[in-house]
Amino acid sequence: MKACTVCKMISSKDHCPSCGNPTSDNWSGLLIITDPEESRVAKELNIEIPGEYCLRVR
Amino acid sequence: MEDTNSTIYALKTSAGQERNVARLLARKARTIDGIGISSILVPESLKGYILVESSTKIDLRNPDLKVQHLRGVVEGSVGITFDEVKRFLKPEPIISSIQKGSIVELISGPFKGERAKVVRIDESREEVVLELIEAAVPIPVTVKADQIRIIQKEAD
Image: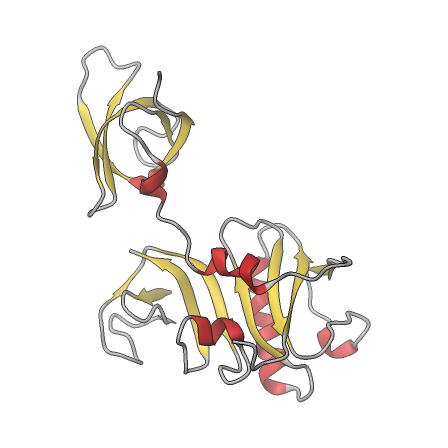
C-alpha cells in the first residue's frame, strides 16, 4: 500500500485517487475515517472524504 | 470544535494486529448501523492499542463489535481527552530529536546492529551522516533518520 504525499490517503496506486499527487511507500501510522461529518479527528486534519489515511509520510 | 459529542476510547489488541483490528472495525462501522464509530487511529508509537472515536459507548459485549484480536476496552475514571489524541495526529519528525555527536544504533540496512556517531544532519531530506564506531577507517555513511535508534544523546 502507498500513501499520498499531500493528502496522506492510502491506496495501492502510484497517484492518489483523491488529489492526483504522487504516492510514497514510506509512511507510518494509520487513521481510518468512516464518518468525516461526526469525527473530531477528521475535522482537526481537514479530512472530508472517508477512507484510510497515514499519519506520517515521506 | 465541540460540535460533535464523540468520545475517544482506547482498545487493547493483540500485539502486531492493530491495523487488522482497525480495518475490521472500520468495515463493521460502515456496514452495520448504530455502531457510531467515526474514526479509528493506529499510532505507530502505541503498540497493542488503537484509539477509536465513537458517538456511542463501546461495549465489547455487543456482538456487532466481535472482532478477532480485539482484547478489551481500557476503562478509566477520566476518558481520553482530545488534546491527548492530538499529539498522535501530528507526530514530530524523528530527525528533530537527533543531535550532532549522538551515539546511535542502525536498526536496518547492511550495517544493522552497528553503533555509529552522528556527524551531520540533513533535516530537509531527513538524512543523517554517520561514522561507524567499530570500523577501522572512519567512512561516512548516509542513512535515513528512521533507520537509526538513539542510544546516547550528545556527549557533554
